[in-house]
Image (cartoon, rainbow, N blue to C red):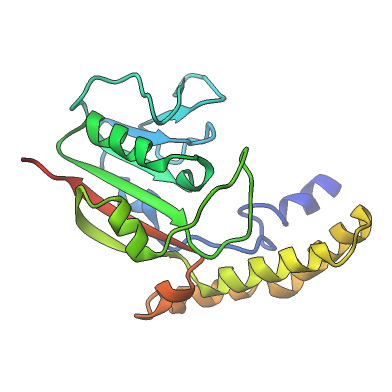
Length: 217
């Protein structure tokens, strides 16, 4: 019972404070004949036919490697996914350039990255991007689409939860405060179903995304 209740508070659970509205899984579900890599996947099979790249795991569909140095020949990948990864590396430009190297001409890149999110180490946390900042980071790619992945509701809920934890030094009281706040604010994420469509949603977005194509010279 305790385990089942715990699931309700973690990612995907009803009381988890964020929800992704970019629908990237559905966006690429039809790429069944493409060679796809998912950089920094954490070993999760988000895209069924993707090759997962993770520096700390290896397995049937996962290659143990860093995104800055991937074991692929140049110009061999159709699509590179990089979801909530670049904030955790010191030099994200190196991963971007490595993606550019391995992509085929007209190959595609899809990146999601945080804007207004509290600190979350995995194993560390270094930076945030605005939507224009993300576009500049990926300026060597032709933009196909960009926008808000996590909306203002998720931003507000997450910040309130983190704030509730720092009120108490006692770990037990901090966790109680966190979970009570999660119960109170989790509905905010559902407001994003409408808010992410607003023209100015990127100004207070929890996360933003960019879908682009490798420019050929």
